[in-house]
Length: 132
Image 1 (cartoon, one colour):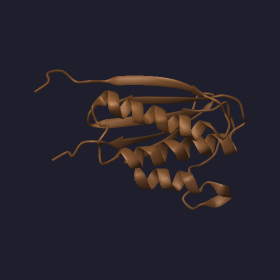
Image 2 (image 1 turned 90 degrees about the vertical axis):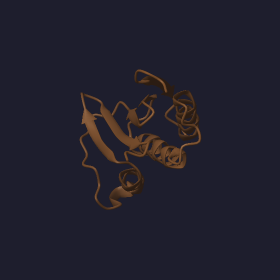
Image 3 (image 1 turned 30 degrees about the vertical axis):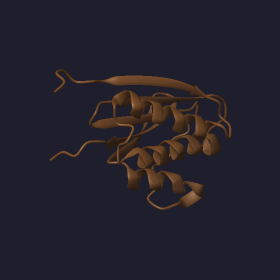
Image 4 (image 1 turned 180 degrees about the vertical axis):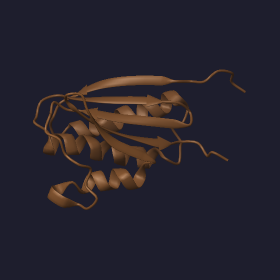
């Protein structure tokens, strides 16, 4: 049994283009591997939410580079996607104005939201381990 709590973080700069979702999925897979959770039952869910958050920033954001932040422990991973947008928006409860992906993020993650300071950060968290 390992003592202490493993806590890892990584930040990736991504181009604000069609290549960004694939690069983000690869970064998320690397993070799971570093956490020792590469075979996690949540790996597909993580790939989906990362892809949707990044795609949302590419399609609806102001353009330019994106920042993907991944922070994790063996029991939880947090995904943050930052773009240069400053226009406020509400998390859609329906797939309005093309934001269907954010609804999927809400469905496949345990927690999700938006932070503004001053640029937009859309985030979600997934629980990786069973909590008994």
